[in-house]
Amino acid sequence: MTATISRISTVLCFLTALSLCGCSAPPEAEAPRPESVESNVRYVAENALTGGANAVVTTGSPLAHTAQFFALDRDGNLIGAGDAAAQTARVLDSIDSALAEAGSSLTQVVKLNVYLRNSDVTAAVKTGIAARFPLGSRPAISMVEGAFSNPDALIAMDAVATSRQGPAAGVTVRKRSAALAGPGGANHVSVLPAGTRVYISGRAAREGATAEATRATMRQIKDTLAFLGLGLEHVVHVKSFLQPIAEMSAAEAQIIEFFGGDAPPMAFTEWISGNPIEIEIIATSPEGPGSQPLEYLTPPGDEASPVFSRIARLYHPATIYVSGLWGAEGTSGSDQIYSIFASIKQVLNETGSDLNHLAKATYYPSADDPSTKLNEIRPRYYDPKRPPAASKALVAGTGFAGRSITLDMIAVPAH
Image 1 (cartoon, rainbow, N blue to C red):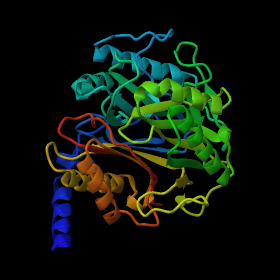
Image 2: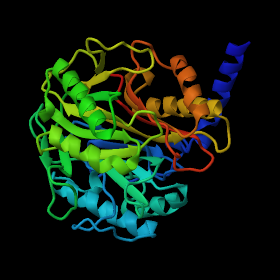
Image 3: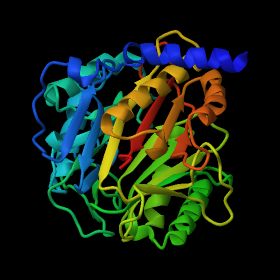
Image 4: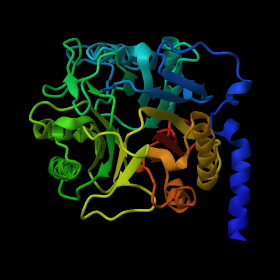
């Protein structure tokens, strides 16, 4: 009986997913859209909630990854206190300046990760983004809420963009911009070259307070890289889930020191956890083409899980960035999750992918109910031998009131 109810729920969610999760109608029902200025980039439909694309597919390009930017001037002073529109504009300008160092620009952004003080500023941020990207060429957008170390900051963002200048396979280039603020030893942008790339799931060493836990977690990551035949020089981006967020500078300093004063771009999200920090990374690899689009790996000493992989190594030249997706406002955690997975399947189908070719997942529940239900429901969708690398962070909010979980996915085509 329970299985029957679950199947009925799944079917109903699939039938309503496009309207409930912010997805627009299938491409054939849309008005014509302008072609991308980048011939190797394809924008898939429009997300009704974020205003960005449901997914963006980029093939064969180097990918510039930026640091997380706040609305700061070059001296580190906040611009636009209390004004979400002004802060959005400044953040996007900063992303553009960082990308210029990597042979890219704001017009080439394929993914925006947006961090919000709360959902009160969501509308202003959406308007600011829409003003900078033409309809039909907007990036995939994820949104999550949380506090910032600067109490006057309302928003922050980091971005991924295609680049016309890329290093050789297996080599990353990190750069700073003199026009931007940021701690010494931390770079504003780095380039993931075309070729094999690696996503390592979040690691969390349960040792001491923030500084000690950060060092211990980075040692775990270094060991994971060594298992892959890689070193710190191959790391392109570092993302941390942190509590309390007031300790961001302490964690940042430890990461910079671990990288010998040449740290890749970093981003921080406040999470609600008994652990002070969890860290995930993106890296390049000199590994040659594989016999399959991607593979999932478990280092010695780690236990394989049926719902997430420790490492996803991507060989396919295309990367699919799926927008953040949400369930219907005010529905239960289970209903939101079923609806979101129905939407994910639809979007992946439109990009030539499927659930067996997810590379990276980030789950952002904002309450215990969807967090628990996600653990129960995921096994119904994932092949236990092919789950994506993943991190799950309990957060203050998802960017939209009444919606208690959002998912952010990266995939490759199935063929």
